[in-house]
Image (tube, rainbow, N blue to C red; front, side, top):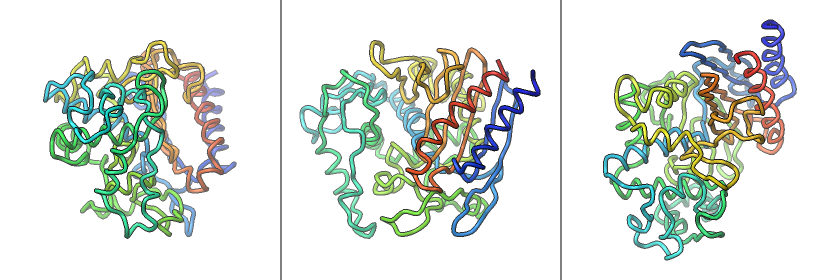
Length: 364
């Protein structure tokens, strides 16, 4: 039985390469605190030339930024400043329109703000040379909810960009500086960062997976955030911008099994951890925590993870899932957009569900 399940995992991974779901991947799985499966295969780039994938490859984590950087950092700031999630964002951003100002911080975290899914900031600028952050933020602050805040779960990058701006207003610091100060430095995680091309580490800059060719920027993207809106906000929009390798992501996820501690240091309170890992949108669908998606029957983790499971995906092909019931943590990093975002959009969904189901069968 063990051998067949192992083969099922391997076959699922092999097929993802063979059918061009992704040029490559890194999969890291832990159970009971120990690595139970680890594999890197394929290529971190195929065009315009090939570079092989390694377990240390740095990926554009895309929307994993929302739970892993923005949510953790924002909650840490809110704890320090004793700010309630029920506080309306107009308290920090007084120039907002009335209907936007009444959105609570908690509604930003849970995608119940009613704000549009994407703010289309990059469409303000015909070329990247024209990018103006002040103009971008002015456009952002002009946006209003499309439905009543609190009424529906509407996945919103816009909401997380607002969340990052609230944190910036409270602290006077950018997300990358705060994330280092509050999370990665005390947690001793050197392989998670924003804007990796600014790193002084040559090895980091060379070992980054290439996402896709960007017609707007007219180049292959390596070490620059794939999301165009985050790119207009200096690579750290709150919705995207975090880069990292599987080991760094896995280490950060220990926060949620260690009651808010990393490396023996307090990062978040147990109350904040509960906000991030349990359903905070009772009566609405899909179920959302602060940052994470909570497991349900249509989950990207497939049907075999327990109702306690929580996780998130990233547009570039990344995902994380934790199942406390199985004591199982899965980090799957791919650069599936290398073949084109539309060409692999359905394939990556099928692959994720198949792989997580195979893992649940093997390690339950």
